[in-house]
Length: 135
Image (tube, rainbow, N blue to C red):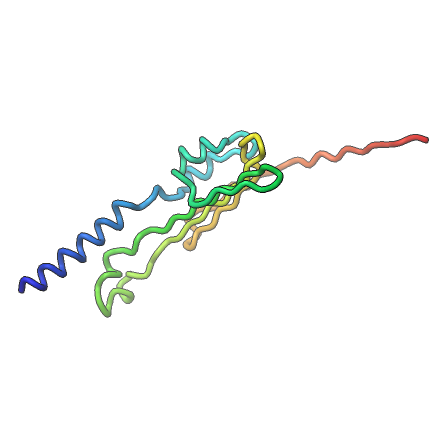
């Protein structure tokens, strides 16, 4: 009897610990606040927490990658029938952002395994300049 109680307590504490360390999720409301050319790296960290990875390339462009996954629901811890009662419904999310050398958002991509988050449709105007040379 004591062994069953001990195993149950360990299982419950591991579930609670998983939920306690869960990073802030990537929500549609937060993604909608990203403005190309305006949002800074500090703003992104305020919205989404620390990025999973941060890289700087030779052009001094910074890329941030925010990866999140929702912990398995309690049904997933139920032996044998957990997957049948919804225990494998896990949502994984990723936000990839490229920043200009001055730290402003150049472009971003959002991915969610359940399609719960989508990037805003951004209309950009392309400016083409022509130069003429005379001899």
